[in-house]
Each structure stands twice: as structure tokens, then as C-alpha cells.
Amino acid sequence: MIELDVEAAGGRTLHVYDTGPAEGQMLPVLWHHGTPSLGAPPEPLFAAADRLGLRWVGFDRPGYGGSDVVPGRTVASVAADTAAVADALDLGRFAVMGYSGGGTYALGCAAVLGDRVRAVVSLAGIAPYGADGLDWFAGMIPSGVAALGTAAAGREVRAALEESGFAYDCEFTAADLAFFEGPWGWLGKVSEPALAAGPWGQIDDDVSYTRAWGCDPGAISAPILLLHGTADRVIPASHGTWLAAHCPTAELRLRADDSHFTITGHAEEGLDWLRRQL
Image (cartoon, rainbow, N blue to C red; front, side, top):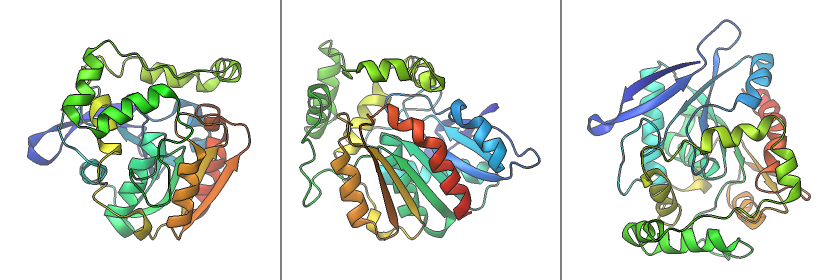
């Protein structure tokens, strides 16, 4: 995998990861990472991508890793950043895949970029804040309510929570901890260094989830696969259910007893589905 910097709107830097256009890997998939995380594509899926002939590309969202901070960024503005990355790499059409908040940004890309996005896979993505018919915080762990509730009050309020010494408690279960002993322990590898550049990546992610997306997920024309665990308490499965009901091209696969973390064990299934759409 190579790493490079790409210039985005306003002369900003986006730090990019690319597994390269090697023979048999010419179909690009843009990866959207979770919160907090770096944008490196998912190592546990590299073998599956090789098998399916896919090329991974990812980037650090603004404020993470080597990408400049952008106060007030939105789901739609990150879609524009995605287009800048794709343009810099001479990618025409591509698929998108994201995990957790990255699933939301993947959906935003499809909504903003239209036919340029060929298919979408979202694992445990977040539905729009204030969506009609969705109790957005219902079933969410207390740390999530605290982080996103303050984010809804504004960037400065969310930053004050961070400065207070707040520590997000994911409330890992025994099943989660056992799962991390396998390949998807990789999640820790990309989340632990994500805040080395400062807290703004995570803060601005949280704020963006509680603001208007700047695009309509219901307008997505590309096929969508939504994967969500019924035991998810970080982003409850009701978010996936709402998205499925409001995105006409979506298929929802609820996985019984999977958590926010163990749902990634079904990511290869999502990649197989994605390849069939291309």
C-alpha cells in the first residue's frame, strides 16, 4: 500500500492510502473509516479484495492523521473530498464502503456524487439526526448519548466535553473482546493513533452526525447494502432500519446478536455483494 497527500478545496491536504492498480485489482473501492480512526483501508479484507479483483483507496477525514482540520464540515463536504481523492488518482466511477460513521459518509458520497458511485456497503451506519420516525438516541450507550448530545449543542460544547477529561466507554462485551483476538483486532490498530494529531477529527465527526447532511440519502440511485447487528448499542439497529425504509435501492441485513464491533465479521459478505454489483 502506498501513502500520498492530495490537495483538496482551499489548498487543504488529505492524506490518502492506495493499494494500487495492480493487475487484477482495477475496480476501486473507496473506504470510509469509523470514529475515531485513520483512513487506511481494512487489512482484514485485503485477501478478499485480491480474490475479487478490487483496489482499496482510503483517506483520513479532515482532522485525523495527515489531513487538515475543517471546522463545520458535513457529510456532503466529505463527499466532495472523496471526489478530490478519486480525481487525483484518475478514478472515474467507483464503489464505496464504510463502517460505523464511515457508513454514513459512504451513503453521503452516493447521494452527492450520483452515477459516479456504483454501489454502497454501509456497516452500522448512522441515520440523519432528527429524522422523522426515528428516536435517534434510543438504545444508545450513555457515552454515545453524552458525546453526540453535546455535539448537537455545537462544536464548542462538544470540545468542552473533551477538555473535561471525558473518556468514551464502548462497553465492550466478552464477545467483543474475544472477537478482537482475531483479524478485526485491526480496528484498534487504526483507532488508537487516530487522535495523535489532536481531538478535532473526532469532534467534527460527532458534530457532522448531528447536523444536516447536505444531501438526501433517499435520492441515492446506486444499489445499497446495509449491514447492522441487532445487539449494537453504539449505533442501534433502528438506524439501519430507518435507512432501509427511506432509501429505495437499499437492502437491509440485520444480523442477530451482533454488536457494533462483531458486525465487521460480516464485512467480507458485504464485499462479495458489492463485487456482484460492479
